Length: 283
Image (cartoon, rainbow, N blue to C red; front, side, top):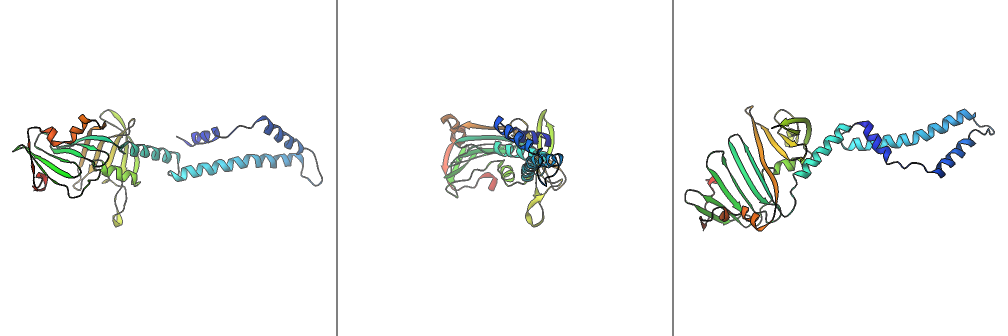
């Protein structure tokens, strides 16, 4: 959106004058041509009146444009960028009473998560090497469990807190967007799809996220759905890890879909043991 379009949109909301106001303005204008004692010449008065009539809406228009551009970055491009980031933030905000499903793959690893978007935020996830062993674990809000594939056993123990928070692989992305720690870099084509390239601030002095540089992570979002397709995370050794989002969907909270949150439903032949065993990733 350029400045001319902003002005055009503003003018479109200005109510056109009706016949009564036009007639009153013409009478006022006609009186300006009637000479009076110690009054300026008619042409001078006319120029003054026209200048006043033109200046008033121009000042109001300029003030409105300055207000809008000041809030969103000082330019039409800044307004457009802010609008895109707001849409991405909205697309990543989970609706209530749904099951959020996301799958991510990259750097030889993959993970997949199903999670209820409302309390108790029950979840099931697995992660591990792409063609290797995966750890599977679940949470019901009150219990945490993990599946031991070697013995086909589900180990279950009490959760450290009564209710787990909503937490998924994109939690940090949502947090940075909501905090305003993101900026538009431009557009790019990823896997044949047009995307917006959004960069997140790195930690600068005093631990504040106010620094954008080559080490800042970047997310590529679909230009139609505003959902992420690729997460690019620069590493300290100079390499970059690219995580591809292969699934991103919200499922209705049906009885069948709720089974996606249960290890017992995933492994019906497994025996369930209530104990305090450590999960495989904490041994």
